[in-house]
Image (tube, rainbow, N blue to C red; front, side, top):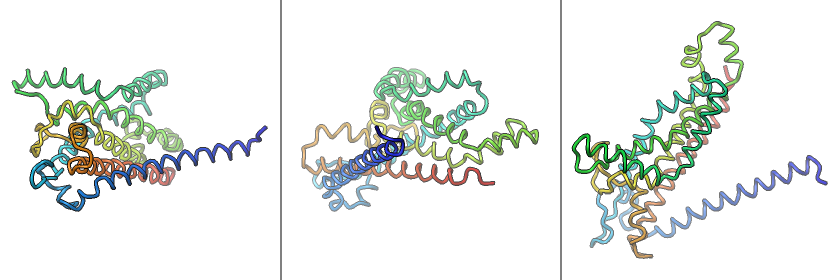
Length: 295
C-alpha cells in the first residue's frame, strides 16, 4: 500500500508527463504547420503576406495577402470584447460581492452551460434572428456584417469574462474587506475604489482570454460575417476573418499547392496570435498573484 508521500510523488510525476505530452503536441503542431507553409514565407515574404490586401492564390502570379482577413478578425474579436466587457465585469462584481449565495450558485452553472453550446448553434441562431432583423429593420439586402458576428461572439465570450473576473475578485485577501467594514466604507465605494484596482491585472487577463477566444472562433463568424474579401472600412462592413478563410478554402485546395501552403501559413498566423494572447493572460495572472496582498 502506497504511503502519502509516495502517492503525491506518483501523482506529480503523472501530471508532469501529461504536461510534457501536451507541450510536445503543441510544438509538433507548430513545427508541422511551419514546414508545410515554409515556401509561402519566401514567395511574398512575411511582411507582404501579413499586410497584403489581395488574395488570389490561383492567379498568375499568385496574390497572397491576408491583411484583409487579419483586419476582419480584429474587428470581430475587438468588437465582441468591447460589447462583452461592461456586461461581464458587472456580472462578475455582482456574483462576487452582492449576490446571495443561493443565487450565485444558480447563475454560475447557467453561465457554464453557455460555454458548452456548439458554436454552429450560435451561428444558426444569429443567421435566423440577427441577420433577418437587420434585413427587415434597416431594409438591407443582406444583414450579414462584422457587427452581427461580434454580437454573437459577445454571448460566446461572456462566460469566460465572468468566470475569470469573479476568480480575480475573490482572490483579493479578506483583510481588505474587513478593513473597509471597520472604517465604515460603503460597499459601492469599496468595490470601485479598492476591489477593482487590486484585481485590475486579473480583470485585464480575463479580457485578454476572451479576446483570444473570439479571435479563434470559426463557425459563428463563418455564418455571419459575410465572407467577402473586401477591406472592411467599418464595423458594419462585411468581411472574412482568418478562421472563416481557412474553413472555406482548405477543402477545395490541392494538397501541396501554393494555395494549400498559404492556408497553412494563415493558420500558423492565427495559432501564433491566439497562443501569444494566452501567454499574455498567463503572465498577467502570475503578476496579479505577486501583487495581491501588497499594501
